[in-house]
Image (cartoon, rainbow, N blue to C red; front, side, top):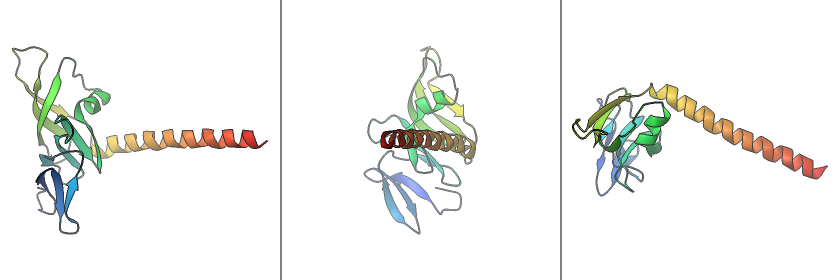
Length: 145
């Protein structure tokens, strides 16, 4: 739950998010175990395979490839569970299978501010879509000549 109590997340047959404005809304991609103070970031297991997922501003992605894509070195690790999220949404903790069996299976990862990586992901996504649309428009103009 957010500190002000305006957003509650959890499990009830599947994942859900509750606000006074929307009531309880089912989440299809994850069962949230934790939510950031501003409710923009959630973490929990995937509803499809149980592996850790991070959801930010409504978009859920598998956590391990997401962290690797941000440049975190997870070589040899298999993240199996996410159990905690900091209030600012930048520090995540959980359990996994380490590369060395004598090591602890606990892990902690710190990611950039959500606004920064969300902006970068959004810019990349819309830039790629824009490029595809421009190519299609150029191809259409060439066909009309």
